Image (cartoon, rainbow, N blue to C red; front, side, top):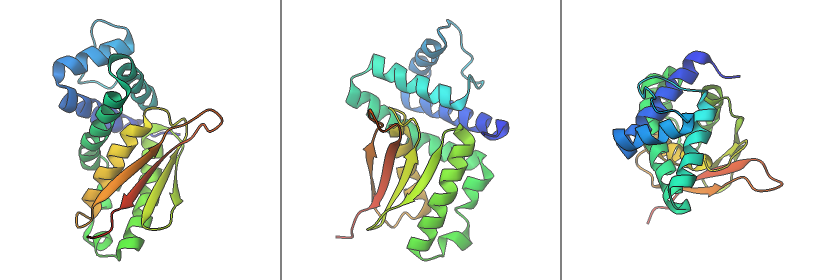
Length: 192
């Protein structure tokens, strides 16, 4: 179950990221369409976090071509991470000196487990960390439709923030018929 205070912080971070990426006028249009309303106060949280995230994903699917919608969700995820880490103490604590000084694999594995818990609490979505070989780290996201691209952007920003000496890329596998969970993998690119 999600924590109302954390849910509100996630809401505000998500809305702020939508405004940052789309601009105030376009963000207002998208948020109004989600609520089927003429007037939305974009400074206040609306609906639940998962409803807002699904609404944004659905609205992007209607307004834009699929690749554009995916790209916008990735960029919004990246922008939302910087806002979230400032608002959520448990997330910001992962950037502590003690954590950053741990060996890379140990630091990343433990931080990904905590990130999955923080995001699950913030969104009310079942999000689980899954260990992967070859310096890849995976989040299984229940009901992982289009919004899985949001988490791809957030995850890439998280990796860069946690250890900026590495280069990261994400791989996304949205939910499919027969598989309701989406998957986002964050992989460390080998040094050249």
